[in-house]
Length: 107
Length: 114
Image (tube, rainbow over all chains, first blue to last red; front, top):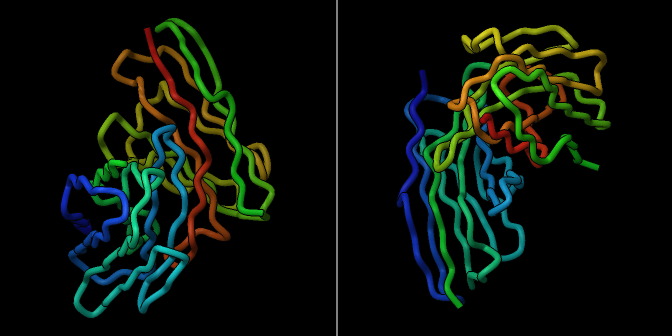
């Protein structure tokens, strides 16, 4: 099956800093989603981005499908950005998640 | 509205108990999913329902029994669980089954088996 790898696995930032999270996948995909899982376990949809670039406030994402990677940018980080960020890809009727990036933003 | 609801939020059950998890969506979605998430791990797919019919069972033990009574509801019946089944159980839905539709997740049920 398809392999999804995220980096870095852990990230600690000072409030106000910027960061880039990476998601690599091993095969062609039709669907790529980025999620933020808050401390209570809720998976919040950030982006549905099988290709191209999208922006939503302080967050933006870029997927380069031909090179099999996606990037999530977080600018001017806030403590509420803390949690786990997952990318997930769909290449065969099921969503496969990467291992996640655990982000802690310190005040 | 992109809301998926799940009840209960928390559940503690003994190994001899029978309980059920409930998931509901009113987005007109025709695909619904159960995922299991252990601590510090990503969600793992358990079941997929497509147009109210079970289409994928990821080799889940029979002590987990899914049910889709109608297009808005998804249940997961639990019986004779083991302590290692303790996890966060997430429900999701999408417009239709297939590769190109965005999935939306509920808040999860945190299950503890004693």
